[in-house]
Amino acid sequence: MNKLLFIKFSILIAFLSTSLLISADKKLAQTGFQFLSVSSDARAGAMGDAMTTIFGQSKSLFFNPAGMSRQNSFIDVSLSQNQWIAGINHNAISVSSAPSNGKYGVFGISFMHVDYGEIQGTMVWDNTQGFIDTEIIKPSALALGLGYAKSLSNKFSVGGQIKTASQYLGKNVVPESDTTQSVVKNIADAVAFDFGTIYETGWKGFSFGMSVRNFSQETKFHTEGFQLPLTFTIGTSMNIMEFLSPKSSFHQLILSVDALHPRSYSERINIGIEYRMIDLINIRTGYLFNYDEQNITAGFGVQKHVGPIFISVDYAYTPFGVFDNVQRLSINLSLY
Image (cartoon, rainbow, N blue to C red; front, side):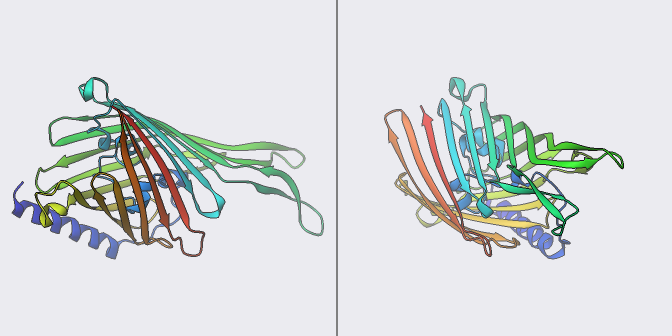
């Protein structure tokens, strides 16, 4: 890819992203299952979730399944915990395997679980308060996915995932007639699809790609239907260090930019930067444009080869405006 084409592509991405942010009408409360839009991975959280063109092995299932395609370890396992706002615990596990050194592609499994804590249930009642307390409600949500990715050439990768998602929001009393009532469990589930591509140009580490996440039919709680948080993302990334010190193999400075078109909000831009030193220490930061309470993100990570095992530990910190600060912790193990 020559420099002129790169410049034209970069200008196009910047123009489209800026135009979308300026012209888009704000969309709110358009979807349910919003837990599918929240990431638990600490590396991603520190980089502002700008992960569309970042090859992240099994963790790529939560961003762009095509990012698994370059995995060269036999098995990769990632465990992440996200202490989300309002005391919500958002946890994720992903596992991927590349048998025969990726000859047949990379297979992966993702699991996401959300614990919303405890909520005191109430019910309308004919008393001075107008209600009575019922049972303690323990809402929860989970998603389980099966993914596949493959490099079709030394530059082009594709990937996809099929997943099932469900959410439990407690029980409530529903009147069936003037004299009878029934207790209904508020449970909804849906099948969704993720897919994406990444193209590596071979010039200065420059890559671009796209992903579509949470593509599904409408689901509903009891009688109320809603859509899942469908999100279309285009992204680009490159190694800035190849401009500053082309011959250095001890340092990397990755710049990643994603432009998002979500169903449930107006368009957004995520920017992430990762500095890696001697394949041991990572320092990260990011910025989120057009978010209500989030903007700056930060974090760090350490990694080490121990025999045939590669271990990395990552941490991310995100100020969240009027809410509590969000902290993420991830542990990743790869067996070669």
